[in-house]
Length: 225
Image (cartoon, rainbow, N blue to C red; front, side):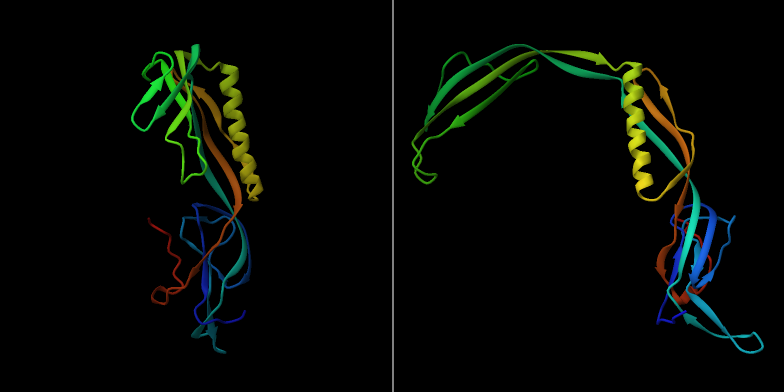
């Protein structure tokens, strides 16, 4: 172990059960099978120095280093609304317009935008350059009339959507090196929504570096926040 001026501990990022620990540097504070909480010191960077009588006469500090696997419980939930609004276009009309610096002249009746109607326009202002444009412009206004209707997602559709989202979630875990030991996620339905909900048991690497606080050396405290 190479001593350093301050040293780092390795702490748990999550609650769980230690599955495996192989320490390369530092002092292991937990063993396989131990249940730990987030913030628990797993490997201490404070190493005791003993004399020939095995009495502690001082300490040296190292950067703790270890391969640690922890079994954790992950809650999963994904909610999908079963109904959605569809706009069915009933009529579409284009109208030309031109304008100068004082007024706009419309070709065709002007209709205000509101529920059941959308209005959009594109305008062109000709000119030799942006600094010297002509004092008029022209364009086209598009008016669309539509009728809204409610659609409901069928059982086969919401099962497929929720399953695909869950598969993506699992694939992201695997890319991070996380193993899925148990999968208890199921699909449920109520009157307004469907959801994939349940728990997963995961096996993942853990051990986050934390600088040793010399006022609280070597204590194996869990994060209570």
